[in-house]
Image (cartoon, rainbow, N blue to C red; front, side):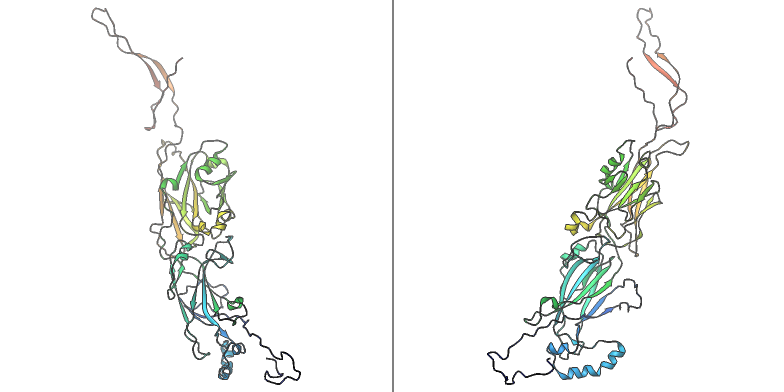
Length: 477
């Protein structure tokens, strides 16, 4: 190490109370990245923008420790160095790295992380629920590498990791799973998943300089598989709460009344979520409106958009956490009586209101997304026809990225809307009079029966609408 100088056993030229001493030699070189092989193989890097690739298994070997580092880690056999020298040419030709199995590495730390929506917030850390960059930690575990082979150059047996992709409603479910040492790793479908592999050094006393160098370089793999069977897509609720039909009367506070009925925040004619809620809005072309870029707020063009027709509000709660990303850009298609009226686009982003207050402290509040769709139904009948009860039916159907079954996921809602238009006829009296009952008397005209009088009215035309009736009120003079 010194390149020359006296040996520890040499007689010192100048005697002193302590001519020699001992220094604790510790390792400050962290383990390198692990060696991996996936099935199917991941991209070789030729495509700078590869699609997310499904991974079924991952084979992991200990990282390599190069020369001369491994000589200070206890591998001092000269034959090992000679074997490495004979492999230099082939390693250069194949662009391989030479080294021995790192004897200081004992375990592998595995972190499963899910991509969070854009602008989502949280505490940065490694615990479940924390954010790690743009990903949210689902769970972590450690697995031991197989024992080291006798030959340091032997690749040894790999640590095999099998991935078990599952249709999961909420990634919080993964925190409570008991995963055995040889069990497959549960991976949620319909999400971007990052698998972080970090080699962990053993915990021998006086081997490492500090705990920080026991684990350093991390290998990341990005994978994804689409959903197979999405079930229970919506939070169970009664239809009366999922479908609201409202007919507003003119007034100065109709927006506030509508927001109060739907439990929304409102400012002017802009409706949005209350702090701590994630809401996605949509509306049909029957209502002139503007949606914010993330569809977390809707602004109606004028107050008149809420008048003179039935305002329909469909309220559904998506029973998936915020990381769920199974929908196409169309999101949910909304049809009324079989005709498309609009969409609900659930984008992978959240608003500032959604992450205010509660969700920053409690990630479990990210388990529901509220869907609000506005539609309008014209109560006026066709010209020349009388008004009738309306019974429209709405269908909310998800548009999945994969061929996931939509059985049970198409929501059907219907309502019976009463007549909400004024009668088309105006009663017009053309004649009136007093009608008397016949004159009744005794044969000798000694007595007569009282005659009953009734008001008699004649109108210009009969009632055209069979559902209409004339109503009269008698008031004293």
